[in-house]
Length: 448
Image (cartoon, rainbow, N blue to C red; front, top):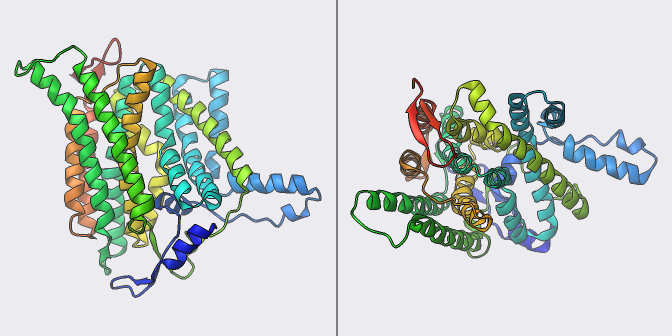
């Protein structure tokens, strides 16, 4: 580890968990996302590699073993190869869509692992910036490819679905099963981090609501606008504000108030999660692998975007339902599983760091970034997510904020969040969207 991260770890004062009497420690520069992904990793056995006579070959095989076999999700890596074969052997677009989604699951976890390895050499600040960039790289890449093909609806729905999934499904599942597993223990967490995240989420939904309210106000004849693209101009201005707010949040998180975001872990016997305190890959090797994994993620993301309409027609599901419900669940399955695992272990600070952190990153960074990139590309994407989508997001943030307001949790809170997600899912399930250009949509019932 670097001197700065060692100093940060050394400066942390041991705390006692309320009611548990177990020693707590700060984990230096490691983030909640890193710890969540680490719950799905496994230690590599290097006994066979020691028998390889060539040092260069031995080092290469050690890298391959750490990157490809150092995760419990390595059994899903064949889906990546099968997706490529399905693309060039023309197995069918639905098969290509399914295999690509499955292949993205281990790739997302490996990207988190590689950014963590690089952070060992760059220090916690640069490592935090890397995590801010690659924490939701799957959503970013899918959004970029969808924008290139002019599929604005896919971009909006997939990003909205990721936020809803993190706030209601991931957090709800974690609190529900964590509460059941710890019935005799009071589950507490630090409200300060949750307050910061929910505040940013409220700012994000405000920025997304303004273009929507402007459209309805003009349509009702209450106000007039200077030009027909005033909503687009407002969206771009709001996007710049959101990017600035996210930059201030990063400075707050990585510099002035870093102690609020350093995940604390209970030291349990036979619990080696989060115990990795040194790099297992070299800096250059980690950079090369990060580039390779990002490229593969980009390829599979392009497959997902290009085949989503075929899957929609084959399964008789709307593109909005697939984008809002299915893609976020599958694409972030590894990170979500890690959040639930730490909730089982009564480590809700890490769980909240994963769910709220991802939702905040998508809302305040990925969404406005998509609008700005679309602006550069000449694609008229705005922040008007339509009434149903924006209303769902606002209510999800409101419910989550009230759920976390007292700094404690139990299984009933998790159940309520899950039921809210189920209602949202049913709502989008019964909708059919038909459009000639993919942007202006008519909402019809499934029976139509």
